[in-house]
Amino acid sequence: MSKISYSIKKKEGALIKDPVTLVKSYPKMHVTADCAIFGFDDNELKVLLIRSDLELYKDLWSLLGDNIADDEDIDSAAYRILMERTGMQDVYLEQVKVFSKPDRHPGGRVLTVAYCSLLNTRHHELMIHDNEIHWHSFSSIEELAFDHKEILMECYSWLQKRIQEHPLGFNLLPEKFSLRELQNLYEAILGVRMDRRNFRKKFASMKLLIDTGELEADVPHRPGKLYKFNFDKYEKQKNNWTGIDF
Amino acid sequence: MSKISYSIKKKEGALIKDPVTLVKSYPKMHVTADCAIFGFDDNELKVLLIRSDLELYKDLWSLLGDNIADDEDIDSAAYRILMERTGMQDVYLEQVKVFSKPDRHPGGRVLTVAYCSLLNTRHHELMIHDNEIHWHSFSSIEELAFDHKEILMECYSWLQKRIQEHPLGFNLLPEKFSLRELQNLYEAILGVRMDRRNFRKKFASMKLLIDTGELEADVPHRPGKLYKFNFDKYEKQKNNWTGIDF
DNA sequence: GCAAAAGTGTTGTCCTTACACCCATGC
DNA sequence: GCATGGGTGTAAGGACAACACTTTTGC
Image 1 (cartoon, each protein chain N blue to C red):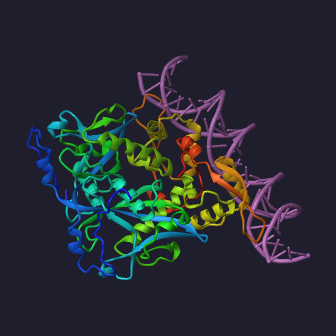
Image 2: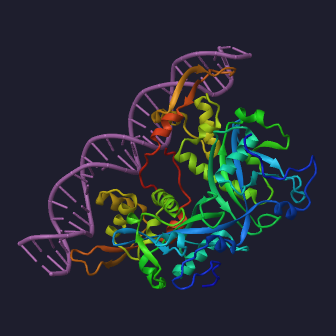
Image 3: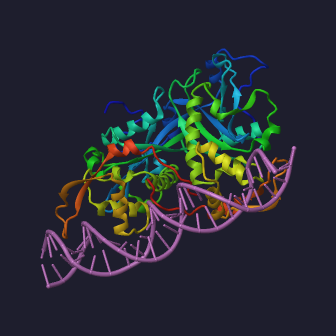
């Protein structure tokens, strides 16, 4: 065994009566939640970033993050960050991964839990007053503060995988959208081109789209039909999946 | 906005020069890694548990966990736990989820990162000298210490999903195994019955099994062929996957 | 009437499923 | 020779991929 254990070892057969004293002997560290907030606009995947306020990272951007409070669940912390930044309560949010390199933060030992959130940039633009917060084109992002580039790339991989398992993409679109918009979204995230007919068939067969009867407006060509996503129906049926698929 | 932010807000336009002072103002907490270590034996899914040494959880079992040290990455901590308990270095291990309810530990605020590990019970049985550590039949587990039952169930769901995406099951089997053993494993984990011919075809078509030319011994019926899993080939080809599959 | 995108069906291939019989071994 | 599980093939149905032409609108 090459490393030592940091547990307190109990004495033979004895039970520990005071868990508080036990726990106090353990090391402590700071914990944050960082959110990769994805949007879709201009046929491009976007990420919401904030300008770093550390001189060390002058001119760099970072993910939106904050500390977890003493009495706060970390999922709640992530929702709080979203609420503070976008004003939205019912946003899609999911935990992705923990990043814990001891030296990942220049200010000391800070462990962070990465979250991925998807939202419609239009719906939330009014909330973003602070001009130090911006939507950035995902593909043009180069360096970020801390290890946030690494975190962002993990979140992106996660998104690519997840969007093929679950219809998350609708969270990125307006309430009413055309099939063209939906396909653009999938093509942008997955980085592939898809056959229009097959794409439409795929979503038609899911029976999760509601035809609003409305048409696109202000387009310089034949307008497409506008659909809504049937979130309720999806929630009810999503607990069915099978198949081994390596 | 219903909650306050715990970040220090920077003064207008000013950059923070000293990240250490900034970070020191944040709350700290204890962080642990807990491993759900799955094995397979007697045609049953097993979990490695240790008897709790807290009087509060007398007679209860818990997952194998430990603190993360000040200078230690949390993935390393999880590998360390495995190393200490099983003596094995190259074990399958993956991060599953963070559990962070403020009151989940009776000794204070302890955030834990759950890991899932898969290993062959036979290969590791020699390492488990301590009689306070045991393999438990997964299906008969009732109450566990802390929130470990919840963690274990999340790890099990994760395993069910993951084993359908990647051929993890081989980590639970001996180096050489029969197709019957492999199928039993999948049936046990997924809780379904499968058609034997189709199952074999599925794995044959993957071309990841190596026929050792050997046969089972000591079975009271026609012995099956023994195969090895081609881990190397799998590692090389695993970066290919597509398809939207809701 | 022209540019630009919307909308739509068919066919072949492959994958998945369902299903039944003979074979090799231990006892 | 009998009990037990090992090993194998085929046919039908469903999913996916490839492919081209007509329609509607704005200008």
